[in-house]
Length: 155
Image 1 (cartoon, one colour):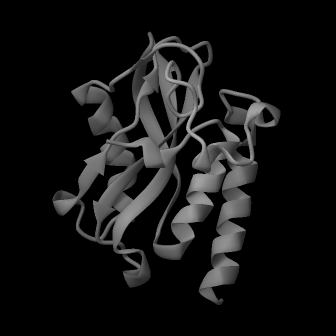
Image 2 (cartoon, helix red, strand yellow):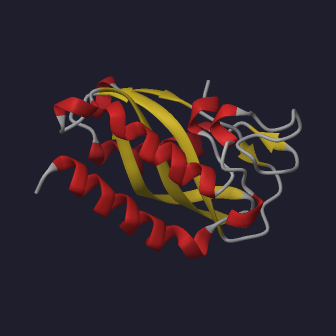
Image 3 (tube, one colour):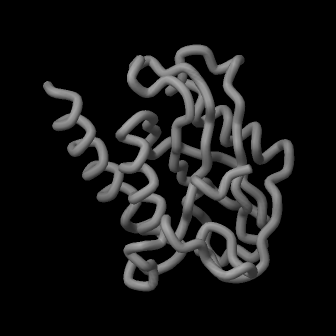
């Protein structure tokens, strides 16, 4: 199967799978989100106060992303902020990882989206939704934008 067709199918599958897990309604997200950053009191398009992930929460996300990488121990993660106030038991999260991919065209900086499970305001588990680098990184950025998130805001 050609890579472009596979990427389109993967993006559609993730869109369907994550459609019930949005933290903001897709109608509230601007189509030009990635080119115009949200106001200063938002991070990733999610309104309200934001916080850094704890080291334990980062480990949960790393454990979800690592199986999608060729050499997970050499990966360098860039993190985005996380909502301080969470009203759902799951939250979509997007950020970046610089790593080797099982697919050579994706080596380097890759955007990813994970679905996190929240208990007591903390991330306790995560499942990878989509990860891609190279020219397909934009597929992930577009998926993240549907949830009001932007992996390009990672630091």
